[in-house]
Length: 168
Image 1 (cartoon, rainbow, N blue to C red):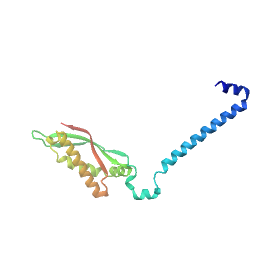
Image 2: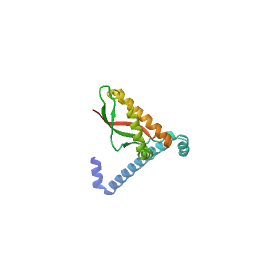
Image 3: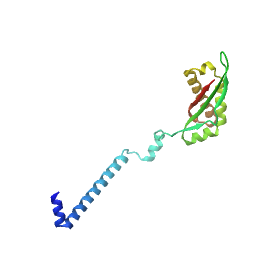
Image 4: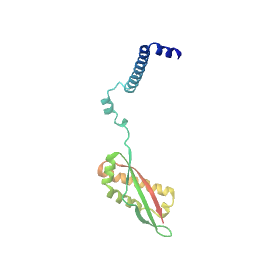
């Protein structure tokens, strides 16, 4: 350290040269590291990128999950052993990608009708248990997928989610 101070005092040009050499060395190291990183990142496959996309379409990134809310909650009566019950269910549909979101929004009346048909088959005893609610949710999903697949040749919906469930 004392040598650096003495050098700066004795020869300012030598000090500037030393700083310049250090800066150039640092830039060379950084550029070399960046180039090596890029080479490792892009040199992973011998196949051209176009062939990879054609032969492996499943390898593309999965579509993001999007949620389509039904415009209003479903309110309906179910028959019970001792008395009829009033049920209210709020629903969100999980879809993958913007194309399926658009299809789901365009077909909301069909989905609502299908869900009401499935819900009308339920009983109060069934809806009092977790297993009964889960079966109703699964039946709703299967029926909606079947109806949409017949219409648009795609199941569109990935999940039917009950976001609110009230039974009185």
